[in-house]
Amino acid sequence: MEERQAPSGQHKMILSNRRTCSLNGITDILSFDVSEILLETQLGMLMIRGRDLHVNRLTLEKGEVDISGEMDSFQYSDIKKGGGQKESLLRRLFQ
Image (cartoon, rainbow, N blue to C red; front, side, top):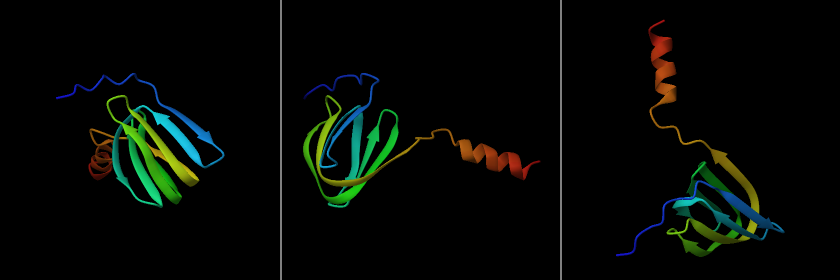
């Protein structure tokens, strides 16, 4: 069984001509199809949208992925653990 290397704590994206993209700091690929790829990075969730998207190379041991296709948007969202919104909701209910 192969051992995974510990994440380096960095996340980098190199985009060339909106057609090829190399990323590191990837911890998981949650879903992908020809129009949308959802990645988990060390800095939060990353959704890539476009047309004719393909995952050409994936090395989760190193946290690297190469993507090709016509990329239209990149959207990050934070990973919230511990329920920051729940706390706000409870605070609002009991005030």
